[in-house]
Image (tube, rainbow over all chains, first blue to last red; front, side, top):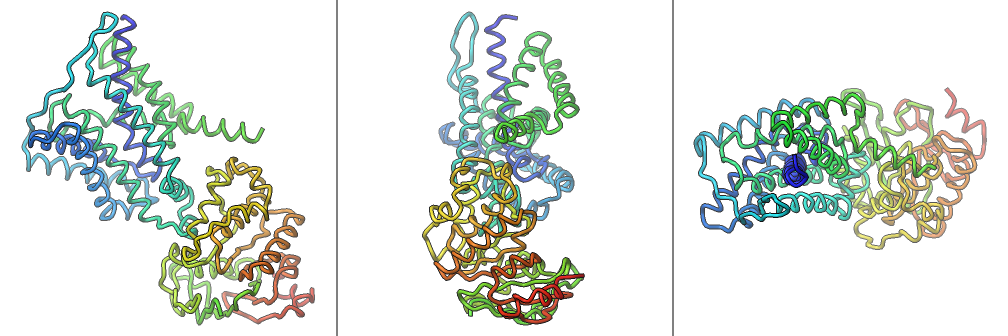
Length: 291
Length: 233
């Protein structure tokens, strides 16, 4: 196991974990909705991107279409279905599972078992004896950019302020003039758009089929569980830690052991840090402020 | 008249808590609603704010019928609300909590952040601190400041003295009185604390079993025994 191959693996794993989890983390962290249709949102992003690219739209714009398209669909799903589940975390599991089946089977009926993909762009570069895919490096940069975008949306905008207040106490937020239903719908839509972005970004690297999102589901849930409720602190920390664990195990013993390592991490965190990494960080900040 | 309720009934599900509630408040007045625990004071305030449905009757604010208006639109229309237990957003900073009041009274655009900092200088010192780490008195000040930031036409306070020490209660009473004198802000508050009721109220409605049992003027309010008769179990 050389350092450069480990680095290569870490870049892949970190970006995959962050991008797989970010949409789920927004929806769960802000709304306490467990979205089992997250994988299907990713799959839809991949389909929109692939179909747009095949129609002649440049790949980068196709990826943006994927994010926007799934964002709009997320808004509609929230208004039609999810809005009845606010504050009903366990019910949301069953309903979003149903939504996932409808979307997956719907895509199977419309587009068949597979779709011709688009090739991975940008080629590769050699560095320190290892060959890196430029697109994978770009995915790493985009995953950090996505975290920064999340930070800007939720920490630096009026929408973010109203959203954080609504998630803490929606009754008080309403009595301060916030249209909380719109905030919930927008938040769900943003989470869905991030999932669509992930699907679009990974569309050129994987086979496109109605089960495309299944490959993201375990990693995204483990990242959110380990990270805790705060989508920003939790996702970035757990992406980093799990990325290291996964890349070491992956490089040493292969993908299977990498996945086992992620699941063991999730079990340990549930047992030892039930609020996840972000819970520990937030508690530390509160204690520091009081001192 | 800024606020008028006629025959308001409300409650939780099929249980009616507020029954045939009629109050009238004129502009610039400070009016209290007093009563024992569980008589429905907070339920009535939540009904006024639109957080609970009005089952029967009507609520008129600034000559407009707001009975079926949503809670967020009532706030935007000019009602500032200080909830029971203060209701600050614990993980938002003090300044972020205050900015949450910006949507109150959208007709008046000026944000009264500096004015609030003048009334409550402690909030300025702690503006970057998370609200959940403030003391009870500071949280009460923050909740009042947050409601005042948007420059409301009517300020509603739900038991502002709850859980805070008497010296802070006195301070809050002085500041609310001062704001009322300086800006003519109308104030409606529900309370059980006799000292605060006497210090702040210009007029008072006594409530029992969800209904108005009587109206007490400022002179009668100073009579300890009269007040006590409405507040003891």
